[in-house]
Figure 1 (cartoon, helix red, strand yellow):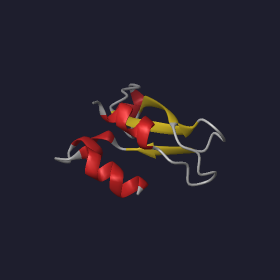
Figure 2: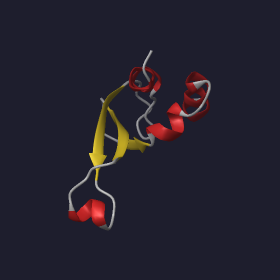
Figure 3: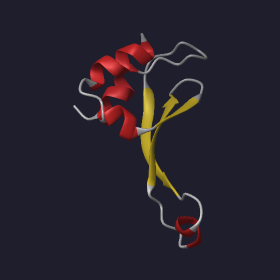
Length: 78
């Protein structure tokens, strides 16, 4: 199962305690030359609560770099 799908299923909103999230990826420019030439090399995963809209941003390089992504998500969401 992809990390995006796992995040959507395991997400529990810290604001309203609702389960489930809409998950998307987005890219952003960095600084210096990448900004000047509009090169979007920074990718992030965004999880938004389906109930209240509270949004959290995750770095997929960190999450995907772990051997057991499920364990990392369990640690984040309890």
